[in-house]
Image 1 (cartoon, rainbow, N blue to C red):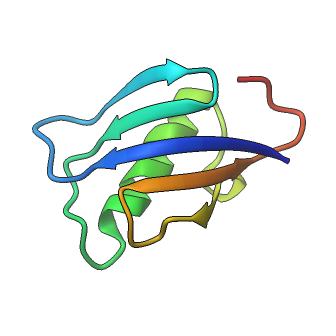
Image 2 (cartoon, one colour; image 1 turned 180 degrees about the vertical axis):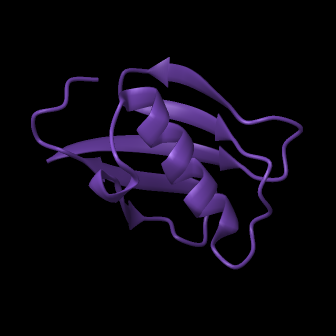
Length: 78
């Protein structure tokens, strides 16, 4: 399993990704941090960036926190 640490910034002006290191990213999403909208926005943005489908990315830790850990497919190289 490949893990990606993400620091989420909800309700941003624009959706964007800053790669701090190979396994640590900061992700800004326009979606609010309510009703799981920000998490869904992060998943879509990260999936698009990595060329994956949304269903291939799962939140392992941090569902209700700005610091999150996502699991990615085993064969993925960051």
